[in-house]
Amino acid sequence: MLSGRRYLLALSLEQEEMCEEFGNICRAVWNTGLEQRREYRRRGAWMNYVPQAAELAEAKHEHPWLKAAPAHVLQQTLRDLDKACREHGTFKVRWRSKVRWSPSFRFPAGNLIRVERLGRKWGRVKLPKLGWVRFRWSRPLGGEIRSATLSRKAGRWYISFLVDDQTVTPSRHAMPDAAVGVDRGVKTAAVTSDGEFFDRSFITACETVRYRMLQQKLARTRKGSANRAKTRDKLNRIMARVTDRRGDFCARTAAHFVGKNAVVVLEDLKTRNMSRSASGTREEPGTRVAHKRGLNRAILDKGWHRLGLALTNAARYTGTAVVKVNPAYTSQRCSACGFASENNRESQAVFRCKAPDCGHTQHADVNAAINIKHAAGHAVSA
Image 1 (tube, rainbow, N blue to C red):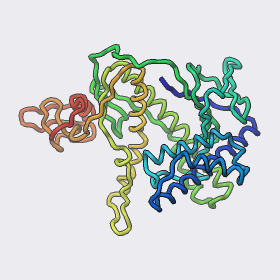
Image 2: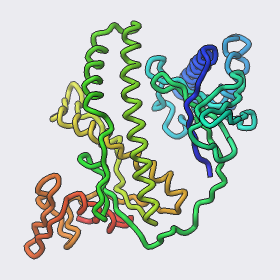
Image 3: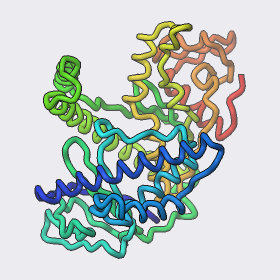
């Protein structure tokens, strides 16, 4: 089974400059290749990886600066571009901006990568053209290296190894009869049908105040100035800590779910569509834009999509089946009698069935999680 291992790098000044150069070259190759593909599509023709790789080899004679980066790293960039265009469409793939895109590049040849343990806290890896690079040994590799990706995040460089840990997904879960429904919300990140609540704050009050002050400072700086770049780096460092906390929460919560249940049922939520702006157009402006902006921020902050990815990843090691159901009426339907009405939910937390012969009362999120569990892969009817 393929798995990822990420470590913090300790680059020398020369190695850091080389990584920046490699990232800039990969960005140029990506943007040039994307523009070529779009131009071909405008003329009704197609362009794929094979001719672009051949043209890249020829371009090195005309542009010697392309030779600074390893050849297989640039080829991997074109492969990633080809995959993105096939999956999303040529005109939906984004450009890699020098300001907004964080440099990253991949060494796809695992046989050229050597790793040595230096001590309890440090190790080193030998990479083409970079030589030996030290990294913080925070966990064992646990498998054969297939590739390595270097990326910069909030001013720090990291290396991510793709390893084959030789693990096989179990054919049967340790608790085959256990199942749970999970309701994801904006007040509480995850609530189960068993009545468990999982939530935490990903940003502290002091970080929130500092982040807003830095945003105001960023708005007053001149575009392209050094002060603007420094302010943006400070903002990125705060957001990197928030992202790491969210990722840790999702991984721990997912491990808890799949360790105790053979089936985990989720709502099939389209997070990208749900968090889309309501500003509209100039001809048809949106309504309640500020309210929708706050809802979008809450949805993205709770990490609904990331929790779903963490569940899918963790389920490989336990044999858990992750099932997604239609979210329609799960918050309005009574889990006791099945009566569905928008009046059943009196508030964010209180659910009281309005059916004459029922009157079932329960926490609204727990009631929704039970409905999600009962759906078991089928749409909840009205």
